[in-house]
Image 1 (cartoon, rainbow, N blue to C red):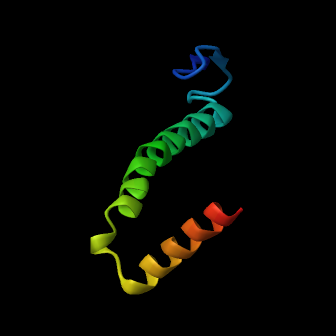
Image 2: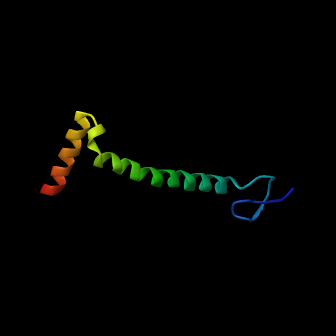
Image 3: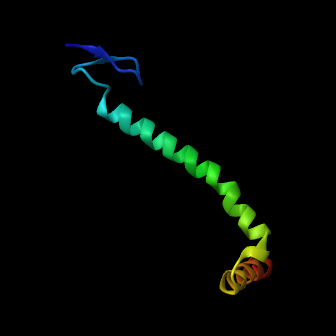
Length: 69
């Protein structure tokens, strides 16, 4: 039985969405999650009071490398 893929809206040979369409959509959703988490990660570097000494030292080192470079 033929079915229309709910993602690409083309005919599918089986009774399911195309596997490549499902995988593409999964990757798109995963990328959106990563994009949403970036501001949270950047916010951590701005509020260094909550960070451990080791992480503060690493951030200071990276900042100095950027200023010297």
